[in-house]
Length: 383
Image 1 (cartoon, rainbow, N blue to C red):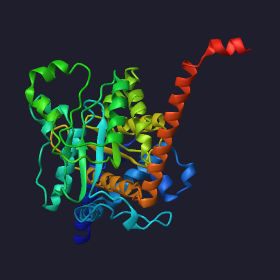
Image 2: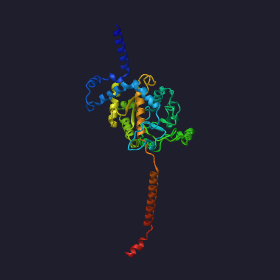
Image 3: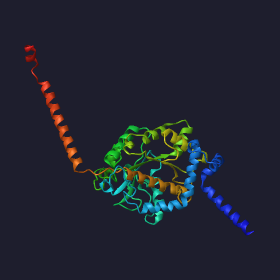
Image 4: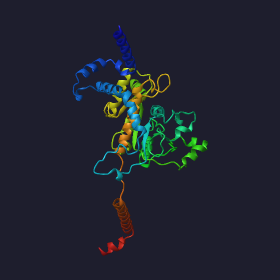
């Protein structure tokens, strides 16, 4: 009798754990279990099965792995994940005091909700209480500029996350231009993100004009980019025959500006709790296929808000671990992309090349000047 009770308690515990794993109610999960018992080669797995296997990996290590990743992020300092490559020493590498993760995406993709979830997940260490981003406030101008979030309360070392203003699906050229400026020139807190049509708003709000001329914030080089996409919006648009959100996301993810990073950006698929199991898997597969990326590597399916409007971290520990692992992966990418420091030889070469360019421009100007004012009539008479 005692063993029967313990077995029923264990069965009830397992069934309660199954509720959290939404993918286990998929129609093809039995097929996945059979393949799991007799695992074939990775190349023989279908894309849907690879997604299910990735979800099982997250579920297997979520409980213990979350505390481990939190501990690594709490004690992280910029350059901790640096790997010696090409014989360059760490002392000769230009490592910034703070690594910068930039969130980009279209309007309503869930970037601010993702930052709030970061505060909640990483704040469980006791260092940072939950704090809502100012983008979620009632002010109209708060979405007009970049926001720096030091989620581990570290402004001198570690990492920070930048929440950007969402792009418009109908104006991709302006979005690519603004993204290129962020990747080339860097970003800073309260940096204005002006778009076409904002001129009237600038005239009416003096505070925005003051923020634009602000230079008291540190300019940070972007080390890693997370592309945030609203999977629910994209999937519903595809069902209605509208592929514009998906095509715009592909243009953003595969943009030339993001190719400045050595690796592809991390893809975060956010959504609420309104999609069914099959819709979440199908949406992920269709998006990854169109973006020409793997269904599992560097892609994270994260529920930012549940159907009741609160963060999913309390009810879904797998989501919390997926977010922590995404941040951990972003820091790995950041520490691999640091440039070597410039020594005296590099500076001499730079000065010499600039001098040669100036001399070439001078001789080109003199040649053009002589060609314009040469005595053409006298030359004809001599001939």
